[in-house]
Length: 507
Image 1: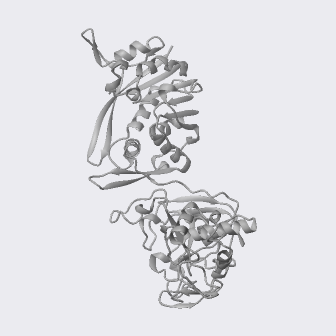
Image 2 (image 1 turned 120 degrees about the vertical axis):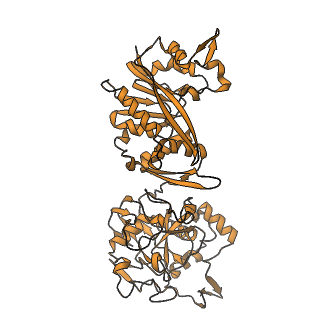
Image 3 (image 1 turned 90 degrees about the vertical axis):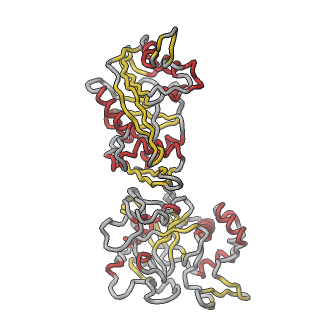
């Protein structure tokens, strides 16, 4: 095991790179890598034999649940290409069987490689695992291996079909800082399930190469093998396979106490959540303005010149409004009733990006990648607290705010009258309540509508009813403002709504 110094790794193929790339190679991702120790060589057949002889395929504690299920289904006792021959083994190649070359890299799937690392950890008391994609990239950069464009006449390893038509000994090709086969010989499994980098865009000429693998079940292999040519032989190549597949792949162990962190960057396919994402963030991809961005502009203009440090957003949706107003407040608390919705802005806050799928037409879909910085947002994002809660039954500690905003909340409540009658207890004296509502009340809660009906033969508008409820604790500061919202159900179906925005000051 050889130490590899920590560093900041920048991943993502430059858009102007002269060599061909698949869509998943582009985008940008930066990661700080702690120092780790990496094996000098790829794991050899001889090393893996120790695991086999020690009953590694019979002890479930070494395996992930997925791995143990696979092992039982296949009744695996050794790597797929090993052939038991009396007291020894032979190796099956593409067109031949040979006596086992013990100093060649073992070819296994991810599940076997992971089990080996867990076995090694138990036996030594040290923490072994596979590298992440970023850790592999750090090793590549640390060893100063030339990029494909700089190879000259001969590749610097068993790659590009330039030396062998099979693997070769793991100690044949040294490539820098004492490491062998950082590229070539066999692919190397990583801990990283593939997903697009922030800013990933599906290529318009194909939509079925990358995105079907963004499911958390396909792990990246890096470094190429003896048969890897063209794009497969570049440092930017990003190919991934199901963890039980075989792909001329082996592995290199690393030793580290750094916890394994795998980012969740799956595409959100929940239809309701995706529609919300489009309403919040779709202005990046269409000509439709974002309702929540425009609402934030109106709210900030209404509060101009008025003291305000803390804000409570009572219908956070998928977060656009909270991110827009965060630079103007010391603290923003953003709540939503649905955990399905609130996890989207939490992901944006933590990872800086998220993804969703919006319906196109029929069975066709459109993939969206949202990068927070592309919207000019992210400043003061640490001032936002996103939480799941019920605006109709708020916990006692949600109080003492200078501003409360209820965007399209009233029409979602079972009892909007009760909410309006008690919301003043959450505001500081002389604080402000801002209501935005389409007054599209639930039919089944007719008795709790504040307005929108006739009483004694006379029409009672929703605004009239809200005034009646709020007048004991609030004064209405100005005339209402109307704001249009276009809710995109698919690329060809949109619903228009008109919200009325009112500003109230607590007495």
